[in-house]
Amino acid sequence: MRKVASALDAIQSEYFPGTSIPIEFHSTSIFSRKDAFRPLENARSILSELTEVFENNSTITAFATAIHVSKVQSSGQALQDIFGDICTRFNTMLMRHHREGKPQKGLLIIDKSQYSEKLYQDMTDFRKSGTKFAGYLGNIVDIPYFTDSHSTRLLQLADFVAWAFNRYLEHKDDSFLTPLLSHFDRGHHGTNPPDGLKHITARPCSCPARH
Image (cartoon, rainbow, N blue to C red; front, side, top):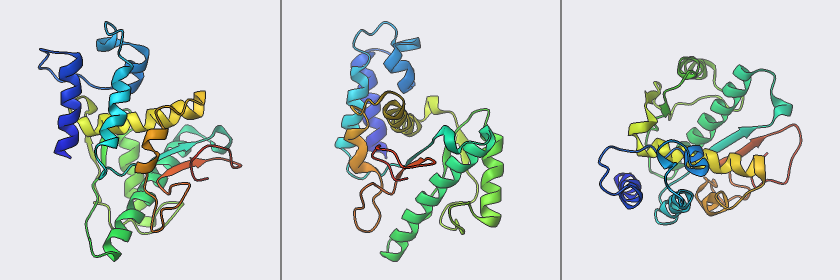
């Protein structure tokens, strides 16, 4: 993933020449030209360059899950369901790799936030009894690692994936999501909709995600 981090560093050098302090690529701020991106008239071009990072790195596998208000009973339940679904799909991919003779463990790296303690507790519960979507999560390292996205380029890229999916769901703008679709995990048989893109809803919708 060093290549990916270097690509984002190169984008910063292009738009902020001479700035050595890392600038966080937070997609909402870029799109709205807030914070460090306020002076840049072409700030949204950065988002297009982030899609190119995916196009130039075929080894990136993405996961994203959203939940519709029709399936939300409380904020805690919504967060737990989304987190549980992501863990399940990540673990399923790792299990598939193990069967293919490529055994490896997965590490969850999560942006520090007001939800960190709850996510830690949720993961502890998942380890004991599984998620509501599946059982054993033995291919994921048991302790998630929480860090600041400001200093972690890969979390910034994950933020872009989540933002692109939300941008489509909220505004029907697929210009950022479409270039990413080939990178979502597609299971054994290249399934479509992709296994790695999930929309938890009371009834199926027309989005490109699995329901």
